[in-house]
Image (tube, rainbow, N blue to C red):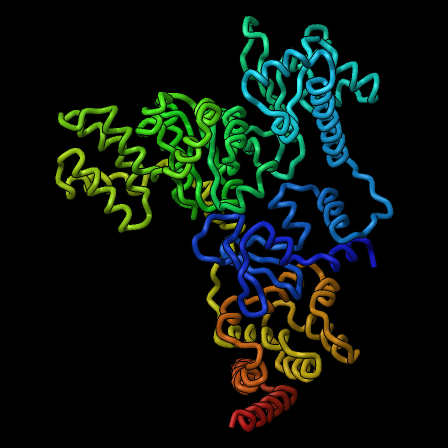
Length: 608
């Protein structure tokens, strides 16, 4: 047995997927909402026996390696090592090659850089200015350690010297990791200089980039700079704090989205730990997909300015087609903030100044639609015709995306009352925006024709064949031999069925316990996929109890045999018609006609 096979055998696909999405038992299989396209009714099935998954909505399917590659963005080598560690299997020999090797090296360099920056901040005398700044901002030692904050020295090449001279990496290696800038005459210098450093991790906790905050307030440079886009770092797909606070978020099934690193750090110090931060104010599709993995409820804690309102509108647009619930922490309408003299302050300052109040605000979130209604009523005058029109123009495109009819009617009535306009007139404006031309489709993940499982009109015989194959694969070992033999006699139409049945016959004749997972691995990939479809048919899972397999088999086989004989009769009749139509009659033709007529008699007797 190869190492890959040993790892697959020692791994439970149900456990691996169940750690990432909610799975419920469905017959002998498990099902849940597909993580690869947006849906509200589960069509994603996992077979424990076959160690494979399939979505009957978008067509995604595969084994544990393919799942991790698609869901986690792992390379094969990364998933192999992760599963080997989990199973306690020591890989005998493994060396990544090509792009995998480059990726591994970049990850090593970035983690060494994280370690180096952290050392400079926490241990080196040069880190005194950084430590003083963090103390002044109220950042604790625990937070510095948890988030591995660091310091980049105000030098042109201190990091370069450390990584090339002491760690033997090349400038090209550092450039691929996004740590250097190439200047005139192709000379490299450190990208981050004189900055407080925030390691940026992907959802697996690997450092893939950095954000640097300028320490010298008088320097004529951008206050914050980030790593450039690289093979590892993609700003639109990262959430600061996601990996560090993953379990806190998952436990509460709620996540608060903030704008900056200090907002997040101060929130955790106020014991509100279900938080992540984005760079800027706009949530992206990639980030929303990450949020959907850990929580059902998303709270936006963005500034209540124009940019914050636009970000909320965009978030509603993106989240509308997902099962996520979107709410907003409304800083602009909090009497507690006003009473505390913190009105207009950002989450960082609120959490540092009054941690209890920050916890209260997190508990008093409002729906995103309520927030937008309040904001529109403040920005425009609901007493004037122009103001009413501006409010409707701003809110109609958003309210039209509410999928639940009762919820949509609730906000329609609330809007109509607020601007003193008849509800039926407001409804007319909503209808105009019911199907916006440019609504985003990527989060909806409408399956492409090439990827989706297209509905195929099956004949009655094909439907019965699929049911028979399903029942056979769920049979216990003693009955398997008999049932395989019965089906082989029927010459099934299903793709690959005869090949699979022949191999099953050999397996059943071996008189040992039948292991479907091992058996399927002996098949070609196209036949593996076909066997999975027979075994994990969601329709049959719903209607057949395991205890009723034998009873169902006894019902279906006579009917399937009848259809088989009818099918054979049609074929023979077609041959007879062809021979009868020949102008030249020969003894051989007459003999063939006699043989076919005898077959018809035999089949008709079987049909009685």
